[in-house]
Every structure is written in structure tokens, then in C-alpha cells.
Image (cartoon, rainbow, N blue to C red; front, side, top):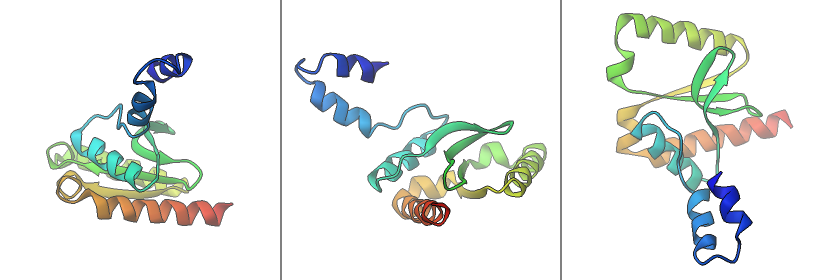
Length: 132
């Protein structure tokens, strides 16, 4: 909605800069590690769908062409036994449905997001190429 407004008034002072900022903004995330990883992915030239539904599951990052899902797991939310078991059932469903699921700890993402983003970008591009 904001982008549409900015584009509808192209001569308004500052709109060109605002569009550049919007193109690199990490929006709509549940956690700071997800925002950090999205910024690193954008820096690698890769935009993935965020908080996107696959089947009945909400996934952190999704590339439908490459069939890659990326999850950022924080220890505080994923270590309880019932959550751990639910995560395994979810991952099994997604893998058996043909998706590659890449999981990263929130700690690792916050500590050093660039190599993780490069690893994801390389795999997504490789799988996109193989599927085209």
C-alpha cells in the first residue's frame, strides 16, 4: 500500500529514496533473527516469501520455484517437548511433499548472518536452475 502511494506520486521529493529503502526493507516478521536473515538475503540479491503458508503450515521463508523452506528456530520456542515433536511432524510432512527444509538457529543467524544467507542463496539458485 505504501509502495503504491509512492509510485503514484513519482515527482514528490524523497520518493525515489523511499522506494530504494522499501526495496531493501525486511517487513512482516515474527522475530528479529528473521529480519536480520532477510536483510542478509536481500544483500545477496535474493527475496523469499516470508511467513508464507505451505499446506497447513506457516513457514518463515519460502521459495516456491526451488521448493525450499528456511526456518529460523529460537531455543526458547522450539525446545519444549511438545513443540519439538510438532516441529518434527511438520518437517516430515514438508520433506515428504518434496520440499527442502533448511533450519538455522536464531543464535547463529544473529551472530553471523552473511554466510548463512549465502548458503541459502546458493542452494535456492541451484535448485531453481535445476527445475527450469
